[in-house]
Image 1 (cartoon, helix red, strand yellow):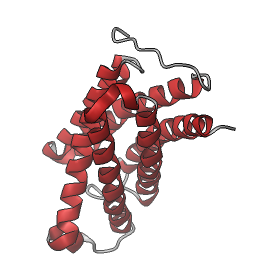
Image 2 (image 1 turned 180 degrees about the vertical axis):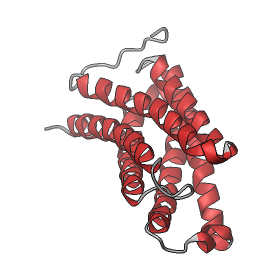
Image 3 (image 1 turned 180 degrees about the horizontal axis):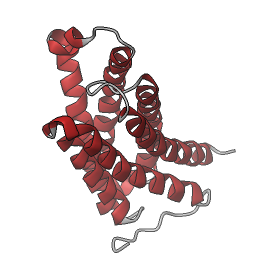
Length: 200
């Protein structure tokens, strides 16, 4: 199996898995601690972020020439952000399990990293979605789903007690984007030229 086939297969599976795990994790978090969710839900969200590292790199590779600097920046920020967010989610899992973790997010280096991680992922996914829409390799609506899902998810912090519901809605839209991109990547024939179709 060629390296391009491995990237296509692994990246497609990682993208679809990341979307599904993200959605399931946030749905499960609805029944847990208002701030930290559930340990199982958090574990699925953590697995989703790990898968996203591979998904973003593979999806970028599939459209690298067409997505240009914007795609590169979105991918790099997305990977850095999702890596840092993985650490945040790990602490949230401990909080959902009953550990006192409030001080971890309160101040210091860990507090700064949690904010920077979330911001990098938020901005990176928006840029990646825009680059995907402009590149024309994947359907424009798939890139739009990433942007809309990311924005809805980011708004969750402003909804107080309703935040978990908003997170689920954001995760659902983001899930649709990543699953769609993964399925399209998996269906692409190895070695087949990319189709530039801006109107898709």
